Amino acid sequence: MFHEDSLFNDARIIDSWNKSARPWTTAVRDGQIESRKQTTDQAIVNAVLDRSPASVLDIGCGEGWLARELAARNIQVLGVDAIPTLVEVARNAGGGDFRTLTYEDIAAGKLQTSVDVAVCNFSLLGKESVEGIFGAIPSLLAPQGAFIVQTLHPVTACGDLPYRDGWREGSWAGFSADFTDPAPWYFRTLESWIKLFTDNGLTLKNVREPIHPTIQKPASIIFIGEITD
Image 1: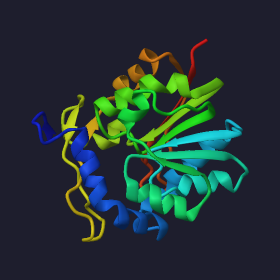
Image 2: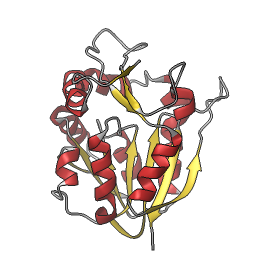
Image 3: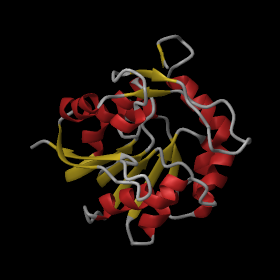
Image 4: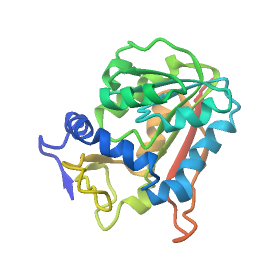
């Protein structure tokens, strides 16, 4: 359900992921997440490769799987995440330069870089933190650079709840018992996602809806924005 109380906020998301970093690493590396294997992992790789980038910034890089995929194609990758344990395991696996930075750090200008593509793969879960990232993106992109976001499709993720922005309870349903205290997440309508791009000087060039091969419904939505000339 929707929540507006103080227990549902960006800080709670970080707290949850600090607790679940190691089981998440196991789940990703052992291929335990069916929708990723079937659809969404390849969808984000394809979206990035279609831009033919020499350099990529992976914001919310997690345990670093996307960085490794791109590095194998001779792309220079900088991965950042707010969770020290995830940065540690990503660094140990190689494939990029990994740093511990919060989204608030990035919004405050503490990351100095210029890349062809910045990507957020299911890593934009909060409210203010996400707005801060969008505000910082133009300063992180090279000319003709792109910002690529893969997230839950608003229509399929809405479920039976009202189709409006708001905090929602998290769930680790389908995951192992090693996962505890699921993070809340901030639901955005399609209109609200588009507005985040346009309000921050980004032109939405493409929207993709990767279809799950079994259920034949969108497994996600991918937004591809560019800096407005």
